[in-house]
Length: 70
Image (cartoon, rainbow, N blue to C red; front, side, top):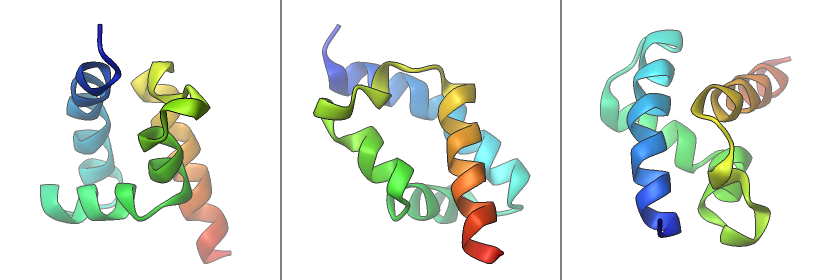
């Protein structure tokens, strides 16, 4: 399966989790994710992050967001 297809499928799980956790809409969740370090790594094929589970990627994203505010 091509990497783009895998990413698109996984995002269908990650984005609603972000929307719920951070009480925001879909566009805001996408912006939060893609402007984060984890989002950048997710977009980069060389990191392999796209192959991890959606829950794992979401937990890494949440950890990054928590560290930003502390």
